[in-house]
Length: 353
Ligand SMILES: *Cc1c(COP(=O)(O)O)cnc(C)c1O
Picture: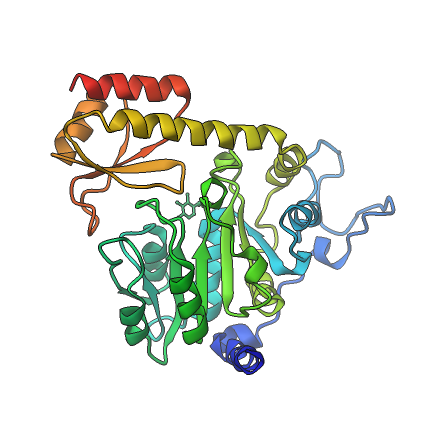
C-alpha cells in the first residue's frame, strides 16, 4: 500500500500540463491583502468605497464557506476547491491536466452529459466505455482503454440518469490500477444509502470527489460546486481558477443555509419518503415496464413508448426528462421527485393516460 501511494504521488505531478506547471497565478488585490481581524481602509482594488454589501470583491478563497464545509465534511480546508457550479470545477480539471488534441479521458455512458461537453470544449478525446447491463462500470474494458495519454476517468455514483451507485469493488479497482485521476461525481450522495468516499481522499491520492449544493442542499440557483482532493491536486486548480469565481451573494447564501442544516435534513427525508410513494404507485401503471432502483432524488422508468408518454405528460403540464436517446436507456424517462402534491398529480395523470 505504502509503495502504491508513493508511486501515484510521483505520477500526479507528471500528469499536469507543462504550461500549467510553469505558470504564475494571477495575484489580485484582495488576494495580496485581506485581513479579517482588523478593520482596514481598502484603497487597493479600485472598488466603489460606499458599502452596500456587494461593493467589494469577494474572498478569492471563500474562507468562511470552506470553514463550514470543512467542519461538516471533516476534510481539511486546503483539500477543498469551490467554483461556479460543478461545471466550473470539472472544467478546471480538464484545463490543468488534459493537453488539448493530445490527451484523453474516459466516461461511462449512460451518464451525466457535461463530462463529454467539457471534453469537447477542451479539445480532449472522450473515450466512452458503456456501463454493463446492470449499470455497473465495465472495469476490465475501461482499463484496457487506458493509454499513456489517459488523464481522467469520470465515475458518477449515484449515476445520473440510471440512479444506481457503483460497487465499492469497481471503484477501488479503478483507483488502484489507473495512474491518472479518478473523478467521482457525488452530486446525489446525500440521497444515497451508501457512504460518501470523502473519507478516502487521504488514502487514494488520485481520488477527486465532486459534490454540489445544487441537489440535496437546495441551492441550484446560487451555483456552488465543490471538489475535494489531495492538497497537491487542489493547489494546482487553485492556481488556475478565475480569482473571483464565487461571488459574494453566493458565498453569503451558502453560509446562511449551511449553518442551518436541520431544514435541509428534513427535506431530504421528505424526498426519500416521496420516492417510496412514487415507487409504490408507479408499479401499478401498466405501460411502465421497469422501474430502476434509485439512490438519488429521481427515478428512471422504462415505458412502452417514451416519446409518446413524454408528450402526453407535457400536454398535462408535467415536464420529465426523456433519456431514450442514451445508450441502454431506450424508452426511458427520468422523473425528479417533486413535492407531495406534484407527485400526486403525476401519478393521477399517469393513471389516466
Ligand atoms: C446535477 C448534477 C451536478 C450538479 O451540477 P452543478 O453545476 O453543480 O449544478 C453534477 N453532476 C451530476 C451528475 C449532476 O446530475
